[in-house]
Amino acid sequence: MELQNFILPSLVLLSTLTFLHIAKKILMTKNKKLPPGPYGFPIIGSLVTIGDRPHESLANLSKTYGPLMTVKFGLINIVVASSTEMAKEILQKNDQAFLGRPIPDAVTAEKGYELSMAWLPGGPQWNKLRKICKSQIFSAQRLDLLQDLRHHMMDKMIEQVDKACAAGEAVHIGRLVFGTTLNLLSNTMFSNDMMDPKSDEMRELKVLIGKIMELAGRPNVSDFFPFVKAFDLQGIRREIKVSYDRLHELVDESIGRRMKRRRSNGSDRCGDFLDVLLDSTDQEKRGSEALTHLDVILLLMDLFIGGTDTTTTTLEWVMTELLHNPTILTKVKQELSQKITQGKSIQEQDIPQLPYLEAIIKETMRMHPTAPLLLPHRAEEEVEIRGYTIPKHTQIFVNAWSILRDNAYWNEPTIFKPERFLDSEIEFSGRDFSFTPFGTGRRICPGLNLGVRMVSLILANLVHNFDWKLPNGMMSQDLDMNDKFGVTLQKAEPLVAVPLRIERC
Image (cartoon, rainbow, N blue to C red; front, side, top):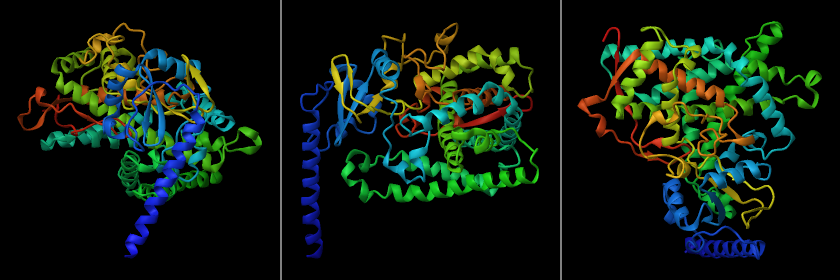
């Protein structure tokens, strides 16, 4: 009886709140001409019809409603762009108006999330962080200074695969790449002495980042029905907070060790990202441009979380496509053997000599974009596009997956064909709106240069130093090529392959 007394008032309250929310939306959008779109069901909108593959569902809907359409996810209006022309309207012509980001409820569990460069809606603080990233952290000069650390991590990765080769064991490619990427990032940020790849600290770091990505990727009712956010009905915010808090502690401990070392020997510098960021906290020298301690933590958190999953996903798909297309694998191995001495570990300065390898990476990013809907944008003001009104605070999706598989821009778009990027002017930088793997405009990923270097370096070393075969007699045509939608567009069935050391196996 007590349960019934609780449920009935709760249902009445929920219905009342829903009605009031819808009524408010109707009043706000009265006389506003939104882009066309499906009506959807009452309250839930198009959530059921969109399903768990929104990139594909939205691409199909755009064939009916056009390249700019409105779709309801629960009570949230989302405008979706599905052509290069509409992408250009949003990401270039009106980029200032669409600088905002809708913040997933799970992210709000992180301390200081509203100051993170990933979620700030433009403004002085965002400009300050972006300037530091562009001019000091991810500059070509800074990345060149730290490449020896990344080369050392490549040797460690080759040793790890060598052991599997000697034991005749298969390698879980995603796990190998995730660990290697995390080692590369941590050494680039903290240097060798700060993050030992075999330490308990590093093992815990892997678990925490994996947990954050898993929870952040779960569909969350709080994101579709804002009035229930306070209740955290699925417990996602409570659960992810534990991992966020502990990851903050680990990063803060590394910062503390470096600050102690700098105080004991003021001239001692590693020249890594952490030194750059700590130098930027000097109020006397930097004035209003100085970073706070929390700014430093949040930037490092963004790099860890943003860099590991995207790089891992891309490399697992590259290796999958190479094993699925043995002729292409043979061709890139020939390029490597012609340009690089056999048995030599490939270094970053070797990468410009490998145009076919670069073409393979680009084609993988086209076929399997890590962010198929890019990172959502949010209108910071009311905007009119092609006669339609997009109200302030509306969420914007750019369906990159749809654009990357559109016959209007790509010949035979469903076929893996790296040759399309040879002698092509299309680059990673997103200037061509048909290919924006790192986004474009002001919101382009600040770690683009580091990301391309890491993917190229890991792939080149895996292909050059080892032959690879599928386990248990599996044929290339038997590979599962399906994906699953989450924070990134991951391979549905993890890739497992057997390495054979070229010189000794």
